[in-house]
Image (cartoon, rainbow, N blue to C red; front, side, top):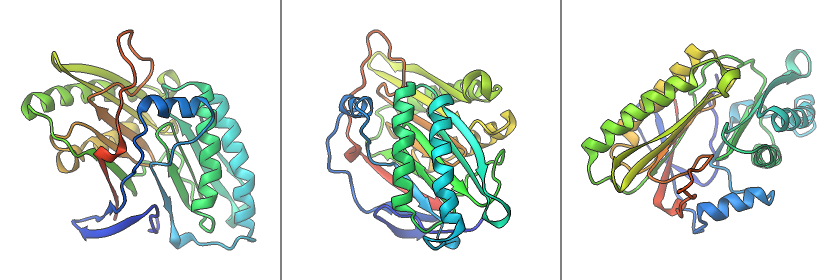
Length: 288
């Protein structure tokens, strides 16, 4: 797969086997998770977590491929809004496009529809002249390209968010985290139709600390390919998220996240979406 540019206020800071890009800007808003959830319910959009616009696939605005993107996106929106997932194609020969859209498996259909609609609008704004484009939100993911990627593991571009605060008991925390990730990874790799390729759960580290974690693969992957993607994603923990209170790894084929506060649905009877701010997180983007 060809390389490309990553947008979103990011600046290159070095190469360690990967081109590492770290966010040069921090989100200044102090929006709580409760407000974030209310925004989705109101049909409003939070900012994307990231996007990838492959500058090796530049096209003109009046090209047949650009026109086909405009025809493919409504299909992705309608399909994902109805089923939470769709992979489909549009066009013929060299102008054929392959697209995929998926919502996080624990959210409501209304939140899914709102997120996918926002993603379809925003991806054309952020990647107006690229035939290969991807956009990640907290609740959904959307991509399209001229190459048939269905069923293939894609960890070509990775977006990582990590909490700047360290846990107080790393040994106990990492032991519990490892066991929890093994458990929910095994849930995600059962046939995708049965569970939306989703695994989620929580575990107590102490009376005062609980880890919440969620993983999901795109539903075009086989169980074996899903497991491969999740293994790659969690393999980043020691290098990027070691001893951190929270971490997210976003690939085009899977998504992994853990926090020390509730963030997935349904909430327990004594739980609520916790107040948190993205100002406590830093983001890194990697590509070969």
